[in-house]
Length: 453
Image 1 (spheres, helix red, strand yellow):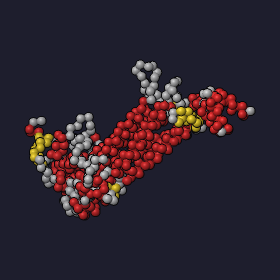
Image 2: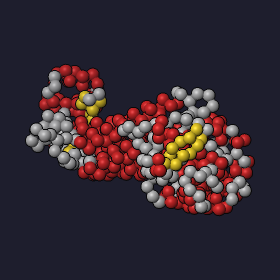
Image 3: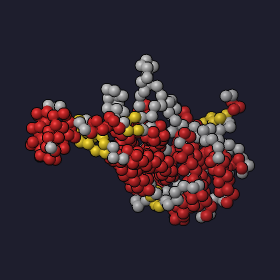
Image 4: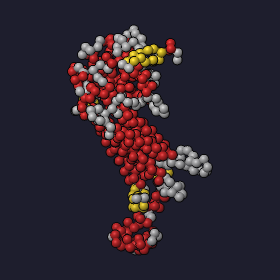
């Protein structure tokens, strides 16, 4: 760009050249230079977080008007700016790296600058004027990056969880339906990958469904715990830095804003604001539950691959829907690509969880500055798991079938036959029979038939 296409802004470090038509300002421009995006996402790729920040800013503006801290026309201009942002692409307005140093000040100032500039346009001034509304003095009034961002992280995580919860409940229902359709058809159970006892085919799938439901309930409880927020506990949990009247009114205003936006609107203040500053335990708890869900999906996907392996030299107990050719060289080969995709999504989600766990180790003293990294990783986990579960349901579970002849044959094999012998004659005689049979199930069957005679 030529010099004419830039405007000059100033901050405590000096002058900054900002594109003339940019809705953001100096601090956002510094973030763009300091934190280059190579193969990562802009913060605008996480609209749940940006929108949550905007809801907090709207509630703050309304509260500041209510207590006489800013004039009514300022709040109106800020609200119009927020409505405009909620109704358009966020990419041009919020271009910084999705995570950055400084405890998330980059995203907070990005939001502050954009709102100030858009509101000032309505009030008759230009981008970069910082008047009559200033990003810090007015948009950020009576709160800080710490409590605003933390509160927005909780709002965003709860909103994102809703979609995953729906898909997980749907998968559990699909598995229960599969179990019901399989009815009393037998299946050979295995322990340590060795033949064990015969069960009903539906028992396995019903067990997976039950575990998923319990894990979903646990994660939902963790998401509900995020209703406790630290808004008003500025910087390190100290509420002295905001007007007492703001502190008393802000959560009611925010819940009203969230209700209007169709989001959960039961926020309450955290029991200990200093504890909320020192650690992100509620977010960590949800991440831990999501990690367990991912590992359960990983195991289930692996089980589907095993049970569908073959078709001739493998287990071949279930038939997966055939969705794409499985080899560029082997004619007729069909791979279990859908379970594998789900497993890949789960692996990536587990990697994000490992990243989040590290942030707990490095939140020294009074403030844990890694909440952007925590939230971005959490939102990534949810998106990955939604993708994996949605595809698994639609393209695999809802169309899988039981290979009845193979399962019936397996369920009448050596292990189940010996268990039947044990039930009649006890463990010691069954062990002797196992040694005598030496793997030949016909000998065990003959012995069972003889006892029946």
